[in-house]
Length: 243
Image (cartoon, rainbow, N blue to C red; front, side, top):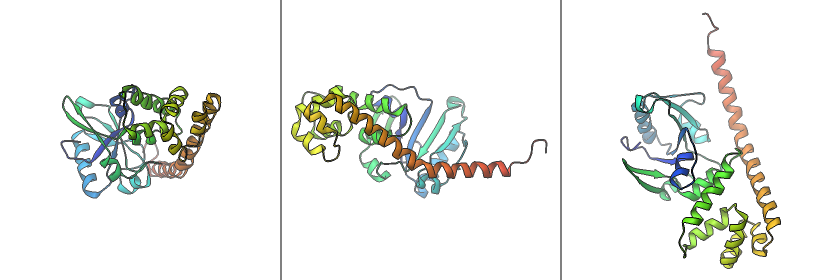
């Protein structure tokens, strides 16, 4: 990606590792700018990786802009078998220009890596998949425990918006009551944290997760139907076995 100057942000499980939330991930996920020039650069990078599309949809800007992920498998010897998933549009997540402006740059041994900012990564993780919700909790907890004694206001606001650990939410509401009052307009369940009502807070967190899962299922329903039509079309075009 760096060699071909692709405008891309690492996201998914590999990004979670960089933010201190360990996860075993076989895939490498990127958010990419779906401009003509950037996708041409991405194609060149994929050629270098000897990467080919697997499954559906095909590698096309229209599919990316509608919210689909395009999946590739690399065959270049040093990365043989690596799966690469690229996306442009995600539910509840800002457009790429804003994501890029907020990105985190991480220095690795072999160079820099542009990573989706933690608040954006947390939003992208709010899916219907079971594995994403424990990861959200670990990501925000890692942010909490790595912070110093005087965290910035932006980080406090992030915790109040996204913490899923009842004990930490109760502590945050106690330590920063004014910030908690402001955040309640966006996250009503904070009234339970402000009142010290742990049982109600736990129930509200469960309900909040369920609402997000349902919203994600509704978002993906037409996209999954489109993928199924594409699969049927591929099956009809394949010649019968033996011919």
